[in-house]
Amino acid sequence: MATIRKLRGRWQGQVRRKGMKPRAKSFDSKSEAEKWARNLEAELDRCGSMPDARLAEQMTVHELLTRYRREITSVKRSAITEATRIGGMLKREICYRTLAILSPSDIALYRDERLKVVSGSTVLKELNILGHAIDIARKEWGVHLPQNPCRMIRRPAPARARDRRLQEGEERKLLDAADAGRNPYMRSLIITALETAMRQGELLSLSWSSVDLERRLVHLEMTKNGESRDVPLSKRAVETLKHLRDTTSHDRVFPLSKGAVCQAWEHLRTRAGSQDLRFHDLRHEAVTRLLERGFNVIETATISGHKELRMLQRYSHLRAVDLVERLG
Image 1 (cartoon, rainbow, N blue to C red):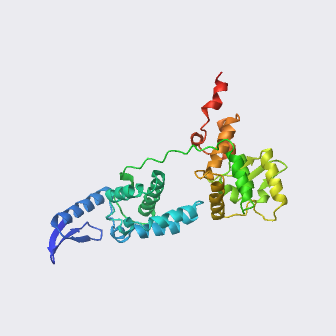
Image 2: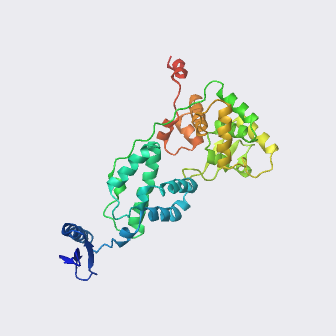
Image 3: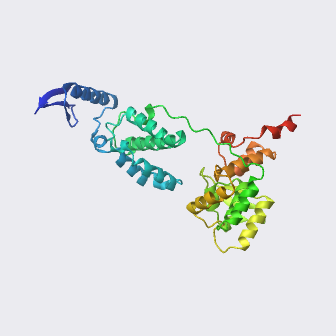
């Protein structure tokens, strides 16, 4: 039975149950103390034990995300990208909130403020991180919260999937721009991306020991979806890689960092007049070309590494004019 009393100018709620340590908390008003006691007794009736909310009252969102980045993010394959994203989140005002008072309205305000400066897809990724961090805290770190406030708000709509394709003559302009640049690997990197549909991370981590030019195969031990796969090489890809192998002594096929590629790509696409083209658009172009050449969805997914076939819908934006003749 809960006891509500006034103590030293404040209202104290106290809940006692036989065989359990009493819990007490002070509030500015009697109604707040009564509400706290009712909620605590309801939780006790539901789970049969006295929840300890002190950790939730002490831990801020900043401390939550910092621990999540250290213990959870660090073991993910996308650790660098997610750690960078969390670093940006730690600068937001919401991080001063403790988990005990973090409400759906707080997160909705965060969502709306972020949508003013970034895309819906970016906000979705941030909300997913925060929501998962709270789930981990509740399930594994002993943080008592009656519910996850991240699961109680509307999610922003993701940005429309890009359908950017190379225009006529644009590939030649990109390769000419690569030849005019100072990075000796960009031309080969672009061609290999277009011929294999490999992701940028897969290309940059590729070692010569995984390339079999005789069998025209590349073996990827670990990919984004957590599985290995073999990527077939076209004749053009084989010729490009043979030339590269004969002119380099590195163990990696493309001994470049992601930052170096980003910097070179910025200069390259400006010289080519393709300022709106992203490197990932080359993968989109490669997948669409495979479908246009008659490969079915299963065959295309085997090459590109898409685990869910529905994801190919984002890439297979076939030009209607190219389908007219096939319709008869």
